[in-house]
Image (cartoon, rainbow, N blue to C red; front, side, top):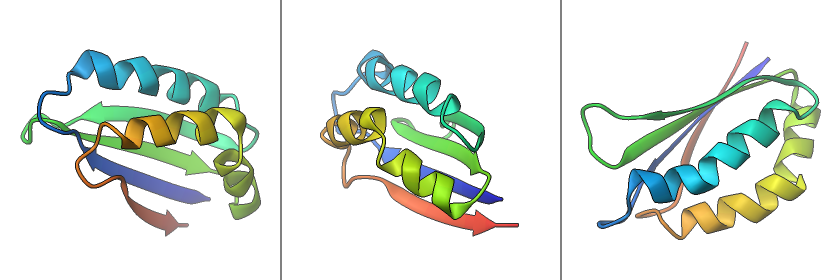
Length: 94
């Protein structure tokens, strides 16, 4: 099992509604990807504008397929335009 935690901070002036317009589709579509064991987005309660994706995947091959999926390759670049410095990803395995 692989666990990813992807953090990002939005640029000044970006709203939660703007973030959710992209991330809701990404979360919903990714949950349907083969090998997905969990995919959620959280908004920090202590650091305004900071978000975290929590993802769990069956194995590296299925995670690789997810990263190449249409929804991922379309939505993540659009999301990165809203961030201050892109996404920071921590990967763990069990």
